[in-house]
Image (cartoon, rainbow, N blue to C red; front, side):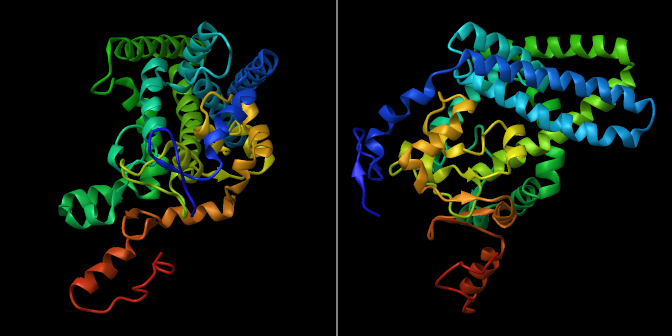
Length: 359
């Protein structure tokens, strides 16, 4: 691939040096679109809660499809929260912060604390030397081989789909987000504590209206659906077959955005529920673009057209990708460990020149 060099000395793909000027018009928030998205999303979410409560009085099974839809809408609520955290949903910082707190309450996520961690994710995504904050635990092949038996077991458990997409999301939003991360400053720690108090107040109030059992069942069920869908989206956005990761000395922001973040091409209905975040390559290129402008930026930015889309069916391949192979610069499955083990033992491994069919 032909390369240019940007002002920092990092190598970058041709044509990327002028992208900042080209995306400026997409970074302009629209008050009309933001208010419509906010009111329609929160209104629908409230309506679904009401319908779930009514349906539970008739039949639990009647509530199931409503819970699934409510979980999808809660993903959309989180995208609004997410945009507020980037300062992109409204022009006003005050409006972003206030709506961010409200949507953070609905998603059980402390606004300022999450914004701090997520900023680190954007600044280090695709950088092998800065893994560990705001990402999914990913080891290199060599790290896995050299790890202790217990660490390998823990890694396999953490990457197990049942744990990763069912248990981990509930733990993350119900438990992990209740405590500040080491390194958080006073404002970020206080945002956790204030959110915990707000969640407690909301839970007490809703329990007084619905009864604590009904509230707990609805809240946990809806969050389970939303959490699983959200973690899956985040997983596919950075754990896909052709993803590009580099060490710090060769890492480049633009390349990391376009080649280290996926373009997840979803059906229209799923695109609506997920707030256009499938255009994740555009979001990482410029986090100041509100979600309602992402698709238009993708269509009109020539640079973005070079990014190959991942379909829903194609994204399922990501489930078999576990480790980063630094030698071949690609994500591979656990079978590579066995192949390398045979090679060290003197047994010629199959497909030794390529990892094409190892997963």
